[in-house]
Length: 236
Image (cartoon, rainbow, N blue to C red; front, side):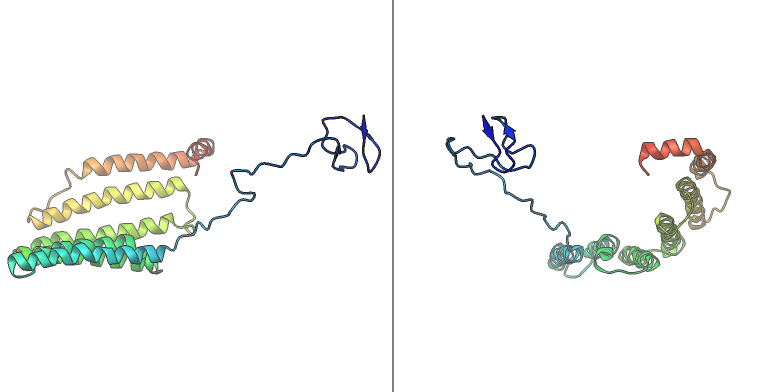
């Protein structure tokens, strides 16, 4: 039978502390064993998970110069001048502006879209210069489609922003409508390039499903119960 040295309450043998005052129970007749070393640290180390995205993007940009210079050197050694290596230059320019530039510089969204569209335009221009053919496909097909796609991407970025107050189903509805209209516009410019302007044909197979899905999303947006259930299912 043992008692607490602080308050005198009777203690059970298995109790390491007094249940009344919390005083640690120490039995002088018990052999004290050293506590073994734990294989894990005594405290949790909070690692810094923040990564300098600008540094990583700059490092990748420098690495992209290696294949570019290698291809240009091989082009000069084989063809005695720069020819097909311009395709690699244009491709890396597009990759840099689309994926790495947003990690390096902070700019308005419209400026990102303009720079990306300009990079694609430069790539198309290099292809045109290398082909040395008719400029109709570049002026009537390449540039208009690139411009429309850039405008649509800018609109999508605005809809995805936190300041855009429309419901999520309305946003998806507008996005589907824009995609369908873009396909119709692509068919129009293809006909303009081929000098055969006519009513849309194959693009309607894309436009009509987009309009039907868009209308369905608008109807779902009006049903609060169904909308809330879908929101719970997809966690948005």
